[in-house]
Image (cartoon, rainbow, N blue to C red; front, top):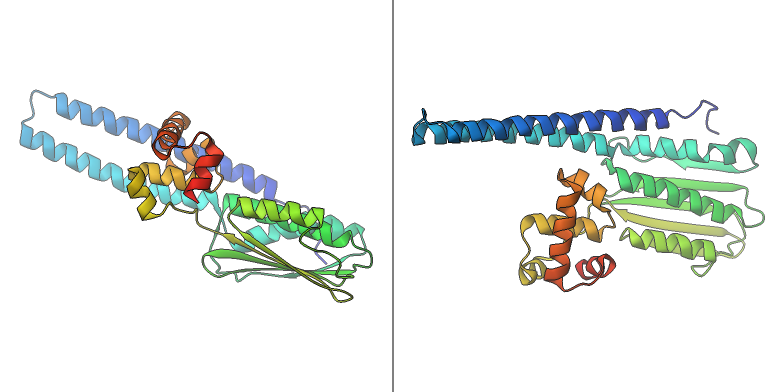
Length: 276
């Protein structure tokens, strides 16, 4: 049984979002100042070419160091420790435990496991909630075991019940979950033994898929376009791509339009399919 304490993660999420907004605003101001300083150096009539070049180089180097530091901080804010993500899952499932006759056993992931990208953590919780609800819809289910693990590249989810073992991949609730997992480039396996229960295994990749080197070379993609393409293939929308790459949404739209043209795709969905 979980404790009856009220979940604190909505407040944590708002705090992280506010801090990330501040980080991005600070970064924008810093880069604006850097660009203004570079222009001032290059336009100066009192500075020789060699001196201007040295000053511009030093300024750009310092800006790159700052960018990497802020990028690392942003990554912390957009990722979620796997133990915290699992604790939020326990909070999500608390009503089933408190107000129903269901006994939920939680097998926690290693505390030092790899942090989860925010989108993966959120999707994983939603998938587990849907899976548990699908399992408890069967008659006679009294116990469910939920386990998370990580192999370094994938979040591994195992869910088992003590029900009649009647679920199949064709069961509507299971097929809906499978479609959601597939959209994340993950895998879902369903095993059921009549009279012994059902077991669902889900694997969710933690890294966005990248276009192959051959495909990227054939399409003539720049490194930035390859990064945008990988995120499009993962299902990320323009706003999420912009936040991940620290560029504007308009720039993302520009890159996506170029990708559609270079790849020969007519829709975003077709572009994502070709990238995979």
